[in-house]
Amino acid sequence: MAKSATMVVKMLSTANTGFFYVKKRNPRKQPEKMEMRKYDPVVRKHVQFKEAKIK
Image (cartoon, rainbow, N blue to C red):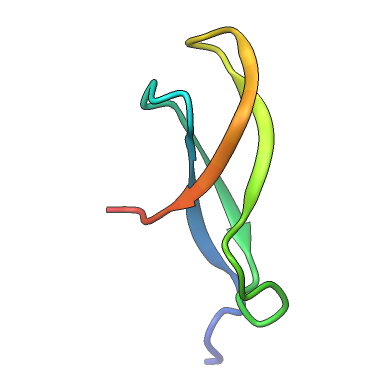
């Protein structure tokens, strides 16, 4: 079987609440780390989320 082209990454909130989303990305097409602005329900605001390692 072929190796999967996508990898699962953890999008961690920059508001230091510990809240995270789990997203898929293709490292061949997007080699840099992901950043996106999404809703954090702990602080009840849209904040920046940055990619972190899944442990």
